[in-house]
Image (cartoon, rainbow, N blue to C red; front, side):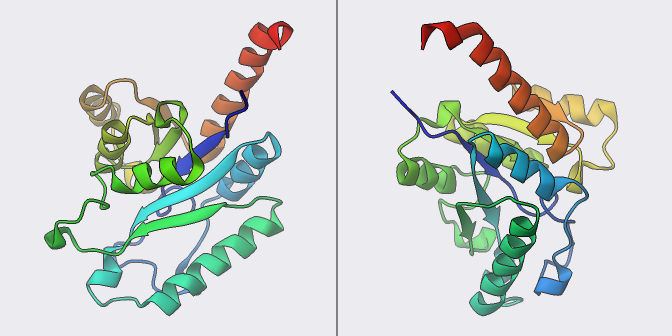
Length: 198
């Protein structure tokens, strides 16, 4: 049975530089070095990539839907220039006070992604840069992966260990490029081990 190879990525701090004041325009969407190339490498190896991102700036009135769409169009153009693509961008527009089920750390967005693609989330790696997102991965049943870019940049080894302790099974990578390398190496090992059975 062929199943879709799918990876879920956070946006801010993973694909682009995190801003405390929210990314409000295409000009403020600045890619992290090597991140777009990492997505392209995964795509070329047969992986589909989708983004799951909290965007409370919409609910707070800091950014409107036209601006969000323009930012994501710009993001996709930048990715295409590197030979990569995102299948979709899922986002929660709500503020924490609204009590929705789609805002991470709740698993609503990931469950929607699982339904859309017909995949078992237990086989879907989710790339995070915060404890909240790792907890969302755990709640959805995804494979949790932490990248030490974005909001995790300044953490010391003890703080990283505390996050991993709270979400057992978390694999830590320096950035999205290192995560892609890990996933492709694991793919290669799986093929070497099981290839003769195909």
